[in-house]
Amino acid sequence: MAVASRHRSIIPGFGLTLGFTIMYLSLIVLIPLSTLYFKAATLSWSEFWHTVASARALAAYRLSFGASALAASINTIFGLLAAWVLVRYRFPGKALVDAVVDLPFALPTAVAGISLTALYAPTGLLGRRFEAGGIKIAYAYPGVVVALTFIGLPFVVRTLQPVLRDLNPEIEEAAASLGATRRQTFLKVLFPLIFPAALTGFTLAFARALGEYGSVVFISGNMPMRTEIVPLLIMTKLEEYDYAGATALAVSMLAISFTLLLCINLLQWWTRRQQHSGLWPSQ
Image (cartoon, rainbow, N blue to C red; front, top):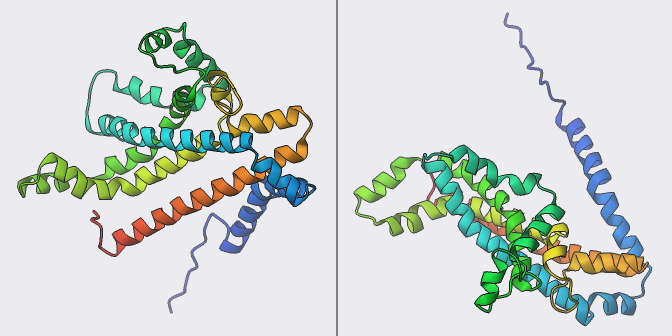
């Protein structure tokens, strides 16, 4: 008579692991964020609206979200090129280039901000050349985009590299044998395969840029209504002991960010569903 053996897993069962996961997320994410709403609730609705919809706050929203989206878009394009080169080609110094990609992860953001400011300031090595052409980088909108692009690049490259590495070269060879040009091969064969990963990289870079403070505070100039980002405005409120106003701005920033990220995640889910249903190419 055969004796049924039960396979024992090293990891605990679903109920226990789910409980630890919820507890961990609650302690690290949910409970700290919930305190923002409790503190913001001390304001009346008119006071809350006056804080989050003031002209200074709206200007900070436009700068933070606009510059973050632009920086994430730039990183998506050039991050794809960097990941493609690192995956598909061999060249001297490749390991060094691959390590440099991770430098923004390890470099303190304040150090990055000071370095970028020294480089792009009107008296800096690159800044004075841009100034000669009538382009101002540091202490202006382009400086904010440069800083956010710097800190967001690794998210895109590291997200795309595994996907590009797993792509079967025979797909490109088959497209070429059928007469497809390089442009057609990329747009109609490769792009649908890497689009979900590119969108994920964009999301990570965008989310990282929204909360950035250290690298931007030096190069932006921190001019209200012009180069003041929302995290800086929140810090200003805290320095003025306006804790309720700071939490009101934080709550509005959290709500807007969550809505945008939810929309992007829904787009990712729809894309994967299209691939699984066969409407998009898949490997």
